[in-house]
Image (cartoon, rainbow, N blue to C red; front, side, top):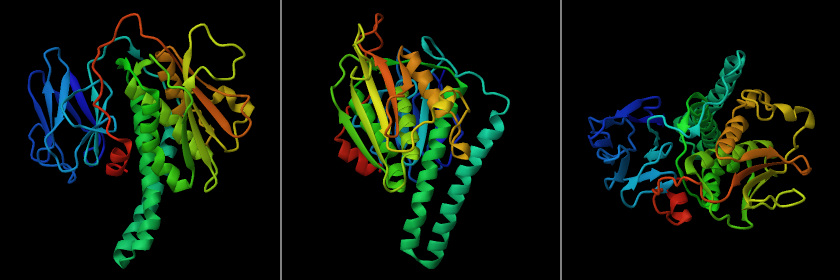
Length: 360
């Protein structure tokens, strides 16, 4: 049976089963998927069961719209396992019954992972508390400038807890790979739009370069989006505040090998101008819960990203030859898989500027 997991918003943690054959309404007045989020309309969106057991979703002319994978719905669209649905400020993760092939769980956490994870969560909550205290003081004083100074701290730590939640979900359970034809440039731009708040808070510039548009890349779009977002957030953290820069390059092969592979590979390279990676800690980079950031990191981002890449027949690597900061490269195979995946895909993309303005 399919489920919706509330991963952000006032009802976070709630899990809603989607009973077969029964349309489900998301909204503040719904008895099916009831929301306490005031930014959600009374009748916000409707989930409709399909004959093959899947589900579609359509917006019900809600005030703030319904987003799937960062794109606003203009018509009914078929949901794919792992899709993120946003209604107001609430985000739902759509999950289907387990199937294979797919992404298996990351290796179990070591015994000392719980204290490390608790420290990471505590630090994020302390940041949120500091920001909310500042905003509360600003509200008491009617000081808008003070509120503006407090908000970036809140926004940045909300991004951090959001990323941590996604990585924990990826760590805990296997999921099905829903392979579709993916435009990597669009996936990268969506991830950049989501990470821009964190970059702005630190004064880090973001630049996207599409050297060559990869053709015939078949991937699970939400998983690749997750992997790219992890690399982006790591790079933003590593870049120096106010003078930092992060560059994301999309292309085919074009890496640092001496000769091209027999089958071309697509790549997404994420570069920052931070202090780089100490070669002595290279063996720890992709190990779960082995953070090199001290209490600022959970040690999950690179491990989950590598797991996603390898499930697609690709990989992620640290570029040892890049000396001006750090460079991580996500490699993906090109070409249509031997067994054709389901042909359904996400909604038609709006102009990125329109989407960004509505959900910045």
